[in-house]
Structures are given as structure tokens and as C-alpha cells.
Amino acid sequence: MMTVRHLLMAGTAAFILPLASAYAAPPADTLVVGISADASTFDPAAISSRDNSNIAKHIFGTLYEITPEGDIVPQMAESYVEAEDGLSYTYTLKPDLSCEDGEALTAEDVAYSFNRAGDPENAFTGNTPGFVYSSIGFDGAEAISENEVKINLTKKNPVSFGLIAEVFIHCKDSYETMSLEDAAANPVASGSYRLASWDRGSQVVLEKIKDPGNFETIVWRIIPEASTRSAELIAGNVDIITNVAPDQLDAVNNSGTAEVKSVQGTRRIYVGFNMREDFATGSEGGAAIQETDVRVALQYAVDVEAICSQLLNFACTRATGLVNPPNANASLEPYPYDPDKAEELLDAAGYPRGEDGTRFEITFQAPRGRYLNDANVALAIGQYLDDIGVKTNVELMEWASVYVPMLSKHDMGPMFFLGSGGGTWSALYDMADLSAVDAGTNYTEWQNPDWFSGWAEIAAATTEEERRAVIDRMLEVFYNDPPWLMLYFQPDFYGVSNRVAFEPRRDEKVYLFDTTLAQ
Image (cartoon, rainbow, N blue to C red):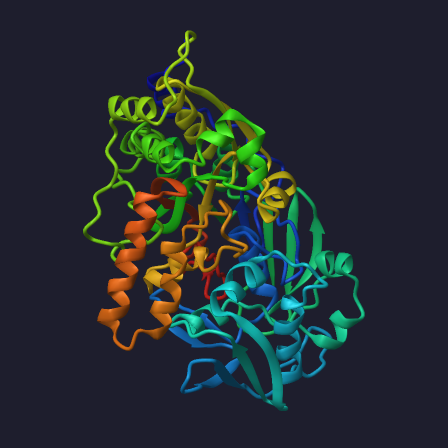
């Protein structure tokens, strides 16, 4: 019989590196990056995952950008003015901006980029309309001169400026003539690199067209298997890899050709409870998780610290919510691992064990290869739930072509495994995943009014102390009526060849403009 202990031990078993492929070492003007998941689209308004966005950032510019230290600095814009009421931002563009085809990029292109992403006829579900716009209450953009663009909002949000910095700018004349299908596969660049080729499931090749950038070509190779990524790095065929598996750290560090660089990441890893009506009526398990008492009980069932130490090779403190330390509610204590307490609460909630020991059965869906050791983590969680009488059917799925489309429609569940990107510069940035009931990133479709009413209070607050009090109260609501089974903030392990100089960021943004050959 498989137990949690066996699963955790299996996750730390030694591995044997496979033989590297026949790829040659990269030439001096080429940088090769090995990533676990393919892009799903290059339409700037439809991109919803970090791997996809990391590639796209080299193709598309943004008005401002966030540095590794959390500062928000100019990129395509040189300055901005916030309206006194906080309901608009006016940006002045840098001179001599251009598109891939050489056409001048003006305020009209910027306004078009924002308005296209929000056009309901396009039905985009990417990060821009699903997260940014729902958080800032986007209300249209307008060019007020050739180099000035105004972004209008319906509500004041203290982090609007940082959120606007995530919107990719694209070129009006090109995109007005393209179908959505063409835009997804054939982007027209506004940034430093153009898409030279996209061999789906294999690699994405970018070619430099202007500064910044120190390599003429960047190749993003799609290598789903973690052991294969490590083998390619050690062999010198790849310069940088993401998601080095915990059991491969020593092999990379002892190779003499590469090293692992680790950072405490900001991505919130959690199990979501899908509270959409069809899940509530579709199965006994889907109905059970609609109840707050059941969702609280399941928090006690999973030993998060053991998962971190045994499957991820790092010591963690369990999350108390969706906000990264040090911006979380300091008064909240993580739910402890207490399976007896979980069983007691499930009994009290009206879900006793049946004659076969089962309380109810539920489906738990998870991606394979997107997050650090995600498949083994999902299997371990499933086993922990089995141990308290919740029969859990774990379904592991391919990320780009299967899981992402389900994610965009909120079709995962009734339970699903997900990691949501976060930041260290503001609690509100992390909380903006749940900026509105209908937000694209409210994948659980949680509707607690005590949470969502807090946003108006935050907008009305006149001091940071008033705002912080509302934030802490909202985080307490999240903790007591959890839409997530709270897990951990993912550590990030990058493998870096001795050939290149690359420093990873905490926020999973793999931006390669400053990467160089090692001296």
C-alpha cells in the first residue's frame, strides 16, 4: 500500500542523468535557455503564464517595468502624471520608439494596445484583462497627443501604477489587419527581439532587432523533464535552465560546468477549491468543498513542512494566505499539520467515514512539469487526503495545451493545483488576484462579501495605517473562509552554465537583456 511516507521518500530518490542530446554548444552570439513548458500564445493580451510572459517580454515593451529590487522605472515611457483623484495616469513616451517593421510607435499604438486587450468582442482571458484590468477598473485609453497617452480607471487602487507596467505594448497598424489566430502565432515586436521561429513543443527562437540585449539570438528550448534539462546544462548545450529538481542540485553543482543559483521565490503555491455551481452540483466532493468547515478541515490534513523538506529540498513556513512575507498579516499562525483535528472537523461537518473508510470522493487536477516537482507534490497531497478518508483522484495534465485552456475558463476542479505569481513590493499586488468576484484570476470563484467589500475601503483610505488595517482584516477573512488549501511560497532553483553571467530574480521574471558571456 502506498503511503505518504513512501511518496516523500520517492521524491528524494537519487536519479541517473540521461545522456545529453546531440545539440551543439551555443555559439558566442547565442543564448540558450531550457524551460519546462511551452508558450501557449504570443498574443500579448492572451498571455497568462510566467514562462510565456518571460519570452514575450523580449518581444514586447511596456510603459514602465519593475526592477529586481521592486522599483518601478521607465521603459517605453519617460514620465507620467497621476490624476489627483487617482482615476487616470498620463504617460509621456520616449522619442523615436518603433515597431518591428520600422514604423514609428506613438501614443496611438499604446492606446490601441490597452483598448484591444479590454475589447469584450475579443474575449481575452490573459493576465492583462483578467488580472490587471479587474484590479484597476480599466476604463479605456486615449492618445491626447502624438507622445502622450491617458489611461482611465473606474476606481482608485494604490498599486495601479505597478499593474499598468505589466501591459504589453503592440503596434496598431499591424494588429488591426491580423486575425486573433494570426496574432497568437505571428507577433509583431515592439521590443528588442522578434520571433524568428516557433517549433511548438520544441523551441522558440528570438532574433535581436534593437537594444537592449547582449545576444543576437535567444533560443528557448522546451525540455519538460527536469533530469533532461540538467543533463543538457551539464553537457554545455544549454546556458540557463529553470526549475532544477531538488534531487539534481548536487549533480549540477559538482559538474564543473555549471552551478545552481537559488532564490526564495514569490509564487504562491496552493490547492484551489472550485466553488462554481456546476462543480457544487456535479459530485459529492464538489458539494463538500462548498462548505467553509470542510475547507478548514482539509488545511489540517496536509503536512506542508514535510513536503517542502522532502520533495523540494528546502525548509518552509506554511503560508497563512495569499500575501508574501513580510507583507502578510503577522497575527495569523499557519494551520498546523493535525490529521486528528481534520478528521474531527469533518465528522462535525457531517462527513463521517463510511464502512469502507471513505468520507467522500473528489477529483484533484494538477499540471505536470510546470512548477517545482509539482507532480510528486500533488500526489503527496492526494495521499494525505486519502489518509483522512477523503478519496482523492489525482489527475496529472500537460501544462500549455491542456491545463492553461482549462485555467482560462476556470474549468479545473473541483480541486486543482496552481501557482500564482506574486511580489514583494506590496500586499495589494498579491491580493489583486481576488480584486473582484469576476476577476479572471479568481479561479476558485470565491464570493465572500467580507473580502470583496474591503477594496472600496482601501481605495477610500487616506493613510497607510488605515489601509493596513483593512488589509489585515481582509487577510483574516481569507484565512477563516479559505478558498485555497494554503501551501508554500515556491523556492526557485536556476541552473547556470559557467559560460554566462546571469543573476536570477525572486519574482520568476527571466529577463535576459543584461545577461552576458562570463568574463
